[in-house]
Image (cartoon, rainbow, N blue to C red; front, top):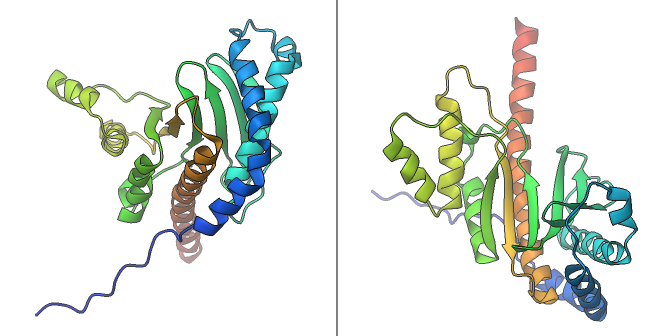
Amino acid sequence: MARNLKPAAPVLKPLDTRLAGAVAVGEPNFPVWDRAVDAYVRSYEMPDGDIERQLARDEVIGAGNVLCELLTVLCEVDPPQDQWTRPKYCPNLSGLDAWMRSEKFGVDFHLGIDIGQGIYLSTELVSPAPLWRMRDDFWWLLASMTEFGDLRFEQSECPTPPIDQHVTRTLERSRSTVFTLITNYVMFQAEDGSEEPHLGSVDVYWPGDVEWSELIRCGAECFRRLYRMNYLIYRLNYIGQKAAERQAQED
């Protein structure tokens, strides 16, 4: 006899009204943002080690301020219950990066310009990250970001390659971010005595000429998914820590 199943509650509530409001508020600034970012890209210089000189350039200041403002907008569309550091920016080897830190998780959320790749939103995953204990809603959050941009996983550490080179070639040919993240985690776990690894970052990329309205809509959707993924890891770690404390008291 079939069970009476209740429909699953949505993982995330729709943001239509808030997104429209964020775009409307930002729209008067779009021409200013265009000029600032275009000026930065045209005048781009490879970092020469003199960060102070780079930071003093008008083009870096203008584009850096745009990134900081945009990052704040993406966060505030669906503001999480958290405290954030003030956004900062700095040149890097591939372009310009802005970031602010979540005090709850202790990780940075980045928005940046990669001269060769486009505009990206990125965050590291909370560590430790016991992915084997994550439910399907975590993986849905990850996979659903493909609807809004080019989803990528950047590992921070490389696990020992498997002896079977056929397995290595299969992993290298994978075009799935979810598959890559899971296999990277499993390979770490397969190593003798391996602790929960520092997995790396989840990134979403857009073309350099993406419309600001599109970046706000898609970026805000991805920001809250990245935040929610880290929250689920953080909550699991918190529950495990409290359970261990209770067990220690009983012993």
